[in-house]
Image 1 (spheres, rainbow, N blue to C red):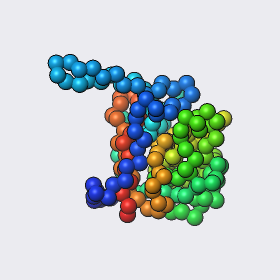
Image 2 (cartoon, one colour):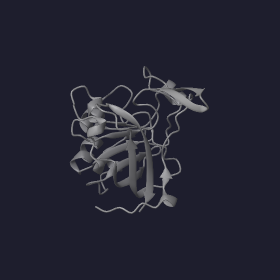
Image 3 (cartoon, helix red, strand yellow):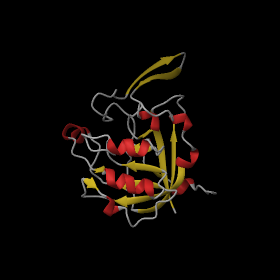
Image 4 (cartoon, rainbow, N blue to C red):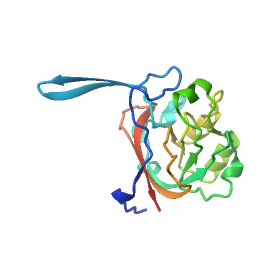
Length: 207
């Protein structure tokens, strides 16, 4: 499929990386140490591979072996549908069952947040296993959400459903200024060899 990208139309849906970027409990927070050497700034970056807006490759599951550098570009640059899920802590199949999903990215706009406060309470919206199964059966290529995780705090079932079928997951998207509807998703992770995940720079272009 041929895409025409218009830079002036792109919507940046990426969380900035800074010392205040929240991290999943137990993960390594982002830090940056900058020094000046011979007139040039250079920085040491330390962070989890799942820091900020990031992608989970199938190899995020220890049982899988498809790494970040193995993810097909057809799952990173593709048509996407943004769905308004605000007010639903548990996102069930009723919110997506009437959508055309084949060959698309499903992006869930919940506005439930990914702040440190949300991390402390773990009170965020997530996809249910039945909805994930429906999306896979409908031919979804990628799934993204604007929360800490596509799974509930006490489960990994949705990760298992999607990643076992090579469907990458985008988490911590910034969708608050994005209207529900159809877009082109453009998402670039770092090309980390044998990477289980990577921070990404992600954009949407209205269709």
